[in-house]
Image: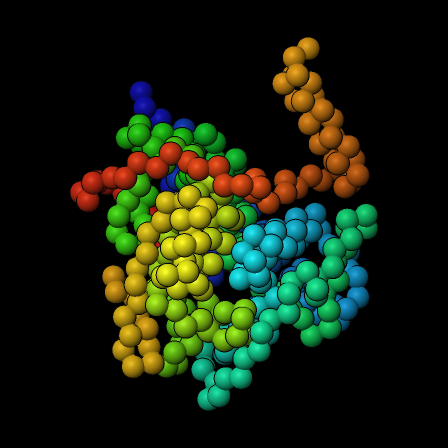
Length: 288
Length: 57
């Protein structure tokens, strides 16, 4: 008898999450959801008493942090290094300046004028001390760990779901096992193509969601401190880890089609692109 | 003991030392391997069934 497919859908981390498992049952999915909610409470920037909010308010002081936060901050520094600065968790002040100062569902307002500035390099404003498991942020600096947390969590939580499962946290997705058809899990990419995977990750970045006003969106270019202007609407990347996929997809979006393709080809990953179509100031996804 | 077995035991011992150092809590580092390990990707036909989708959120 073939194992039963268990699934669970819920809203967390500002998006929809989907857990699928063959053979491990609903209890494993419930444990995994609990871990996602625990992580959301820790890493959200929208709750004053979250661990991230306390760190952001640290004003230059070293603060003790949880093992989970310390690991995520290490991941943020890895992402900065791996992306040559294009994925910079110190993006929060720029996001707030662009109008993303509250949960998206509450409605955002695009500021009349936008004066961006290059973001400070993350390693210059985020200091970690492993011996005391503490972290310090330079005064005025603040972190948003949204994308990094989704990717890193998908990588960590796939182990909770057994050896034949999908952990999809808002489009950052980690896969393991042969899936219901026996040839791997069938995963759709942003350009409506699909791949079968038995081990790996698929992540998509883009500017087609979380838009507000005339031209504001959530993807900040750290080189300008402003919402990115790019000729791509969406990029999906297939690679070994969801954290890496999140970083690569975001890099390609920021680099645009020419630079993005060069970046992804150099790393030998499978990818899919959706070009943007320009309508005045707005750039929309061609496949939307 | 083979070198693989020795490595496994060393890894377990390292994890135990970390667990004691962190008051019993071990958090796996979310940092991936240094270079991408390329998974085997099979392209599916247009009419293939999809079990999950990666999307912009």
